[in-house]
Length: 290
Length: 261
Image 1 (cartoon, rainbow over the protein chains, first blue to last red):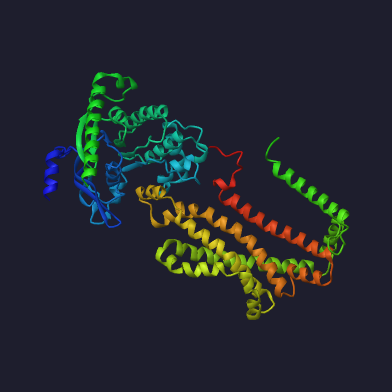
Image 2 (cartoon, chains in turn green, brown):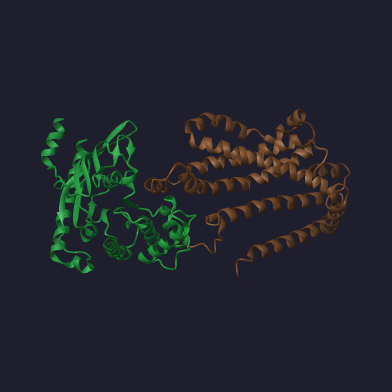
């Protein structure tokens, strides 16, 4: 107990909570403890964060800081050990029971495209609609529309294995958008792509987010990507994962790549890099003392 | 040259080469026709065999044994494989039994089955089922376990029902493994039927091997082997065709030249 209090003195607890009623998504007092081979790991602790409607928030942090876990908690794929997730005023979990209506508002894009190899692009995009028992013609119409939106017109009948990595990831985004979710949760969706494609996808994402009026939570370990996309950058520190800082990025969307050359942008990137480095040093010191 | 035709050309070359070597061996070593008949004699042997009394009955017997036994193996392999694939502790408990029954040389059990179930089709069907059961079972267990966790997350994030998860994810994920098991299983099935008839049968193509051997009819013996090769080949092709029909999306069914990165 005393060790924890001293540590808290070193790292100030940052709350990302918003004033009452402002948040579309709310995390209150979230922590997550994993038990593997009789060893307990505290992956996340003291997470308070509110996200506004149509806001684009990026979760930034070094690998292993719990940012994916946090996104999975938001998505209802992982149950938090303590704390509460609220989506549009409704708690995501009641005991061990997940509120499926809340989940329906969410669209998820993973690190891997996770396309089903037995379905064509069109059927992959429309999979959520199939599960919602939307009829075939409507599914095809919607899939065509989304293929257009993500720039895959003409590839509707292709199988995933015939596509490049970037195209597959775009299909995954189209799939997440197919049922017009109000909230898009993305876990390093462009992590496996080359720098050029990544830049292009980041531009596309802004356009798509605006076209669909979606709230976006975007996990990344790239500082530049986090600042470029975000209205607010939430920096997570590692071991245990907690909110280290929250940075507001002022400039309006859509942003062109030119913003990255502006001094204000550079300053924010440098400050976040300083914080990340500091955090890394603290973690490695911890490692020695253990 | 288009590589589509390559397998056909290579098959033709292999057959021609074999016939040439065959004839050369007979000419050089002056082999007796009782040991190795001329290729053309074997060919006329096939013609005689096909026209002989009861040939088609024998084909039907062997085919029935193979297909019925294989169907039993498929049903049991699927049923048990799905259960063992899903219930880890049961699979662990059953593992010694599975390994033991795998290691037993099953062909050595054939005389036993003949004592128990007689010389008729039943004993052969059981042998066929036993031989083709294990490759199917093992592949089904592997298949059930190989459903991608990322795919499961997708289904879970979409509120998919138990049935939808099976129908849209688990079934298509497992299918390639089932078919891989069937591909091996069908070959074992033919072996089981033929060896069963050979060791204790009174009809079927395997029994023809015994009679032609006893009569020292080398051409007929070779002819039966040729017919059996074709028999096994056609059954194998049927499974491959089924595979191409059921899982055209799978890597194992595309020509390597057409596959993208």
